[in-house]
Length: 91
Image (tube, rainbow, N blue to C red; front, side):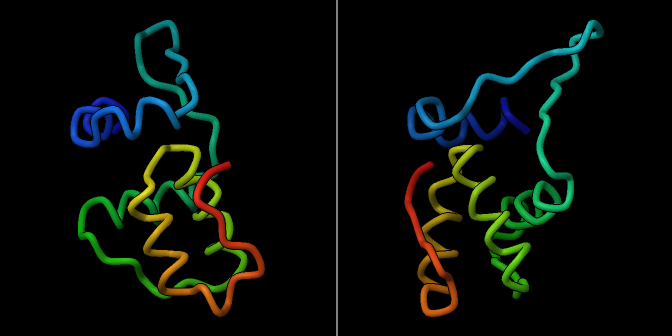
């Protein structure tokens, strides 16, 4: 996902994304919440932001900033602005 996302999003992702580690076999290791990763991957695949409860929504917002997925951050802030306690564009 990182290579695909970085290539698609250009410099926008490269400055926001933290460095990723590779294991000894060369596989990417990303130490993040698998539940939020599933939601973010779904958004990347479909372009649709599904309804989410407040706890997961806030975690997806944090992790979308971690991955440099600013388009999702903007969608989350726009779609749920009235429900979010804190809406931010970068972490």
